[in-house]
Length: 168
Image (tube, rainbow, N blue to C red; front, side, top):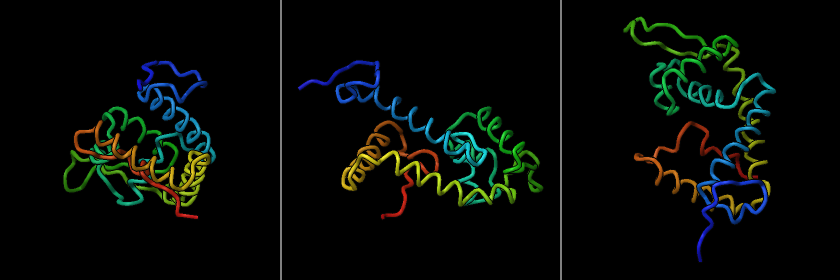
């Protein structure tokens, strides 16, 4: 049995599309849905990952955030500038080392934890609504394996990438 090597996915016949063409299609659809849900609280898709990291440890250096998010420094700087302008974070130089920029949550940023967690749960539910619990577990397992095969260190990516809502 051979698999299709088609690189275009038009919404029909997805079962015959190559895995390498399905991954960006699923990713784009997921990001678009995340963006529309996160817009309800004034965030753009991707910004929640910065907040998720800061909810775990704030302040954190801008360099550490950039590394953990696996993005380029200019991309991180632009994202952080937008979050700072929106009042969700603040940046300041470290008193111990003036070369280090520390990123901290503001009260507004801390206040987003519950709404963003709720949105992330809704996103997970919609993403997996056509899957049984067993299929969800299998998909989680398979995606983890694919991630390990595509990354040298097996890092699953930004926080929340493997997050899932509590069992119902």
